[in-house]
Length: 213
Ligand code: SAM
Image 1 (spheres, rainbow, N blue to C red):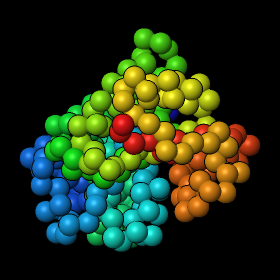
Image 2 (cartoon, helix red, strand yellow):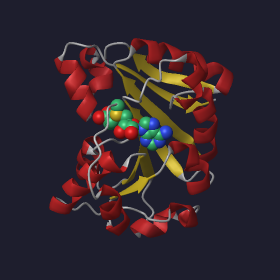
Image 3 (cartoon, rainbow, N blue to C red):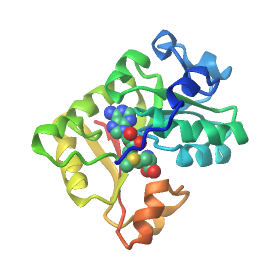
Image 4 (cartoon, protein in one colour):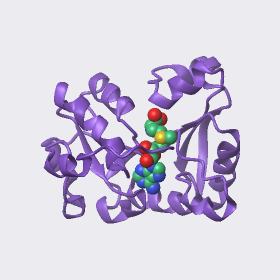
């Protein structure tokens, strides 16, 4: 993803009440932030936050947390929240590599990976968010009956992601190579920004839903 620096974004993020500023001290106590016992779902690599904002509006009974590495991207989500505040959504600016320091054991009920960066070079494989290195991290924070949902239009990344599952101890509950023509898996689908962009170009969207075996 090409990034344009947005002047003042770091400062605005540091001041924003929609961003959890010191997420590591909340480890194990995230429900206190929301003031209820609702399940917590996270999107890792949330981009500008469109998916999470739509989900948070449709599902007030779920608490959402968006994780994004870059201030210049996250700032767009914050701007949207400023015009339409949602009580069940917060953001964290961090690298996903930190998630086991941020969330406690079984604290998260669902993880969404949407259109994760492909990192096409082999030597960068462990940076891919559906890699077995990341799956091991997700295992540490996901509840026993939790699940992970991954969407992408990148066939190579999807093939890679599928190969990672069995050795890392995960099993497929549902999968498709063409989400938008799969009636069962399309039910309740909320489009992400990238999903809209790529599906309009005619790219089929791949999706899996996995659980820990
Ligand atoms: N999920 C959004 C969507 O589907 O429209 C955005 C997809 S965009 C291609 C991928 C996003 O993931 C970028 O905003 C990128 O900065 C973020 N990202 C990539 N690696 C990350 C990491 N290790 N930790 C947190 N965010 C990451």
